Amino acid sequence: MLEINFGTWEIVIKRSSPELVDLQVMYSKAAKTWHDSVSRLGFMNAYENLFMTLKNEGELDKLKPNSNILDAGIGTGALSVSLLNVFQQELEIHGVDICEKMIRKAEKNLRVKNQNNFLRISSAENLSYPNESFDLIISAHLIEHYSNPVGIIQELSRVLKKDGLLIIITSKLGKLNGFHSLKWRYNSIPKETIHNIMNSSGIGSIKEYSLDSQKFFLPNQMSMAYLGRKSK
Image (cartoon, rainbow, N blue to C red; front, side, top):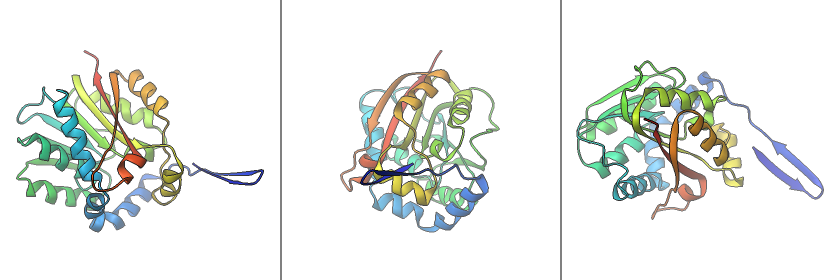
């Protein structure tokens, strides 16, 4: 949502959530340069800093070699590659995305890391995995694209193992994202709402993390990370 004030006038522009086919078309066009853009704007550096912070805090201690990881809305694999750069052991990376071109880029980027991966073209709304399949679920800039973020987080919780970790990165409210969202068609979600959705989906002990990058200011200004564990 974008709010513009002209004197005593207040103009509110609110974008409705796009259809999945619209997202597929939009991100297919961006797939060729997406990974380089994410890196250049400092997001991969910020993701690595986030995972290093979590590692230092002991939040990733339960991850073992070949732990099952799901990257929901994997895109070109930036978040998974950043995790692998920090963890530096082989993990079993599963990923879903609605865009085939993004999936193919992710496969290529994960192969560079000599990493086995199991990627599917799928919406996160209806995952085909059994209950309690994953030790860790990560997701960057996914839920704000959907009209029903509650359903997305509930589905992620369903396939997360008990005591498993859920890490969600999403767009902050603010004017910067207000303009950006007009192009990429998402609605930023208030952090109180994200806390409530995670708690109601069985995800507790929620922590917030900023996305700090030494390369650029945008990740910190535009995004926030939320971490929580599934109740036993």
